[in-house]
Amino acid sequence: MDPQSAIAQVKRAGLFRTQGLIGGKWMDAYDGKTFEVYNPATGEVLANVACMGKKEANDAIASAHAAFTSWSKLTTAERSKLMRKWYDLLIAHQTELGQLITLEQGKPVAEGYNEVLIGASCLEFFLEEVKHCYGDIIPQTQADRRMFVLKQPVGVVGAITPWNLPLAMALRKVSPAMACGCTVVIKPSELTPLSALAVAELALQAGIPPGVFNMVMGFAPEIGDAFLASPKVRAITFTGSTAVGKMLLAGAAQTVKKTSMELGGNAPSMIFDDADLEVTVKGLMIVKFFNCGQTCISPNRILVQEGIHDKFAAALTKAVQTLRVGHGFDEGVTQGPLINQAALHKIEALVEDAVSQGAKVLVGGKRHSLGLTFYEPTVLVDVTSDMLISSTEIFGPVLALQRFKTEEEAIHLANDSNAGLAGYIYTENLRRCWRVAEAIEFGIVGVNDGLIPAASAPFGGFKQSGLGREGSKYGLDDFLEIKYLCLGNMV
Ligand code: ADP
Image 1 (cartoon, rainbow, N blue to C red):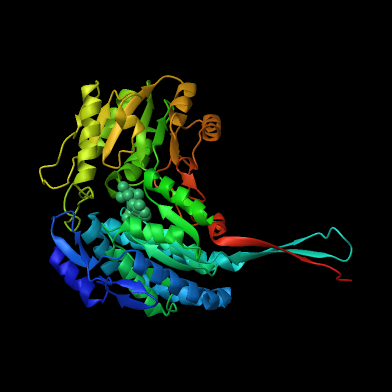
Image 2: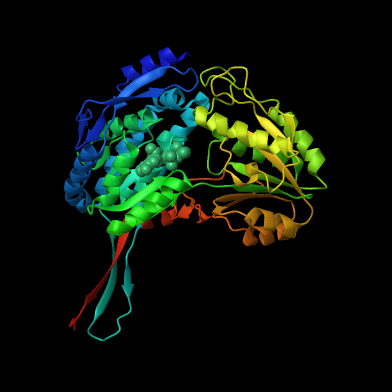
């Protein structure tokens, strides 16, 4: 398939939206401004999208606030029924949605289709999970007293999402919030707003009431500031860079909001001498090259024990050579382009710095002949902790191998970072597996496995990788207030 046919198919399905959604109505920016969205695989303009700012954000917040009273009063079964219709529509349009993701983000279309399932699984999980969101009865402290805990939705939620999984991230944020009765204003990334806008269209088709789900995009700092300044916005949920996350955290202090933050990672993969070579290569490849390495759980520092190092580096290089770089719609392609020139330049600079300090390139190490932002899948060896590539989140298809001697050294290296999102351990030794898993400071630990996130499992980081957890029964907490209710003079 070519991009033009994909665009035509998405348009025929009515899913090519370019306006914001405020109070159930599709709206242009009030001053008529638009911004361009590009296909990173071709450099062509895909769409001109409404470029909104403070005024539109404030109106979206007001719509969400007005809708909160009725949405939060629905029973969980009533909300779940509407969200189930939304889920069914997402699944029915998996093909067009997957294509739209590939058009604006560049990933291979099989990954686009898969992303639709990832996003829909969040919706499905939370529309069920919320039915089990119980309060408590506390044993009374006086004979005539009765004591309860109620869980209530926090109110309007401002959600800010990134470009790497533009559809799944939007659904991951709004699903728990909406399921427990909150209303939302979401701001997708300006690089990839189209798939989130298609999700908004399907929310309308599913009968989600006007104002419950709003979407604005354009001037990110203006929209972000409107969220932060408004006392009506009671929670901010963000996925993106640590720098922007810290700014939002500071800003949220103005009105003391709840915040949940999924920020950057610097994931170690710890490969011990007793690892199964085949399992390790498979696990590492699947998570490293998912989305061209552009995820916060992508292994960044590949720590390899000296006994297995050379064998492992050879097997890994062989596996990397089987990858196929290309346009996301082309048959057999496993890796698309990077999102933009800034991402390309960053990776080039990291590889250049590592090589200038003694790292060796086993495969790749340069731009791909396809041009634009395509970069060759790369394996580096002899990387050390003081190189920039070890302390920076690479966010690209580069495996940086660093040798270690002992388990203690590996744990020290793994924890030597301000980030604490995902960490991976490869070993066949059960005792080592427990020791190391308990010793490393990461919110998500994978043992002999690759792509481990799931809607039913908690996702979130230690240290500067964030606050709160997405997915799982814990994922509702960021959108709920706890109310202690004490009834006196009861008997
Ligand atoms: P990345 O560098 O991966 O694009 P960012 O943190 O810049 O990560 O972007 C993640 C999301 O945060 C995007 O939706 C972006 O528009 C938004 N964003 C960027 N700057 C701000 C800001 N000052 N206020 C609010 N949102 C912002």
